[in-house]
Amino acid sequence: MKHHLTQIILVVTVVLIAACGVETPNAPSDNTASAATSTAESPAHAVTPPVTAQEAFTRTVDDPRVEWNPCFEWMPEGCELAVVQGLDPEGLNADAFFKLPPGSTVVEHWHTSAERMVLLSGVMEVDYEGQDPVRVYPGTYAYGPAELPHETHCLEEGNEPCILFIAFEDPIDAIEGRPDEIPDEPAFIRTATDPEVDWGPCPEWMPEGCQLAVIQMLDLDEGLNADALFRLAPGTKVPMHWHTSAERMVLLSGELRVNYQGQQPTHLSPFTYAYGPAGLAHDTICADGDECILFIAFEEPIDAIDLRGGDLPHRR
Image (cartoon, rainbow, N blue to C red):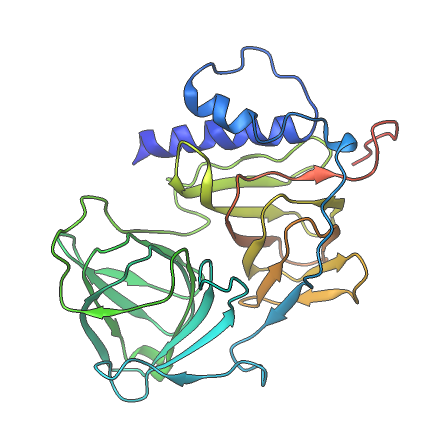
């Protein structure tokens, strides 16, 4: 896994540097780096964001706009599922909240899609095939590979329901039992303080103290479907920019304000879900107090494209 994460960091570094229009000496020459570089050949200030009719939005688990529905019949009583983002008509790249009552268990099952998750409340234990049980606390990221069978237990600690945010790649499903073949890829969890999380600097035009850590990438060759942690110091601002990919996010700490072009400012508190459409320009401000740490599930290769123009000084 350490070697895998090292390759991921290499890919993302090349993409971010290319997107910011900065030359890099001794650029890697392997196929992975070449694929990443080809996604952002032009300097950031020369690129106009695509026109999008989609709007950014936020959701919390108690938002009246979140429509909770019963889970699959074979899951325990009181289990609920809410799709909070499903813009693709084919059901791809959907986001959901999953709620499990304390003291209940979802029996062995598997999913067609990988699960990219953040626990929002409760204490959960997940028993993946061939691995020791993993205990997950609020604010923890968890990755479950496609087709890897597992059981899920919501523990009675604190008597809180377990609520997961899950970013899917393929259409949402849950299949009781075991698949015909068991994948070799392991499940894992990460927190912002884990030594396995390799924090690196953001692009130079972003504020001092900004850091980025890539924790998972489903398609290493193309840089697709990556998950990242983004850290912003209190009282700092990322100037107006846009991304090639949609951003599917959960704020893990701090208070964050995002100003999307043409919309009212969006305020995020911890464990708020936010959806940012691809190409929609925005700036981002971390309020005074705690540092802001944001989980982001990307679909396209990770980039951040500065909109201020090549002739303007990029003041921090």
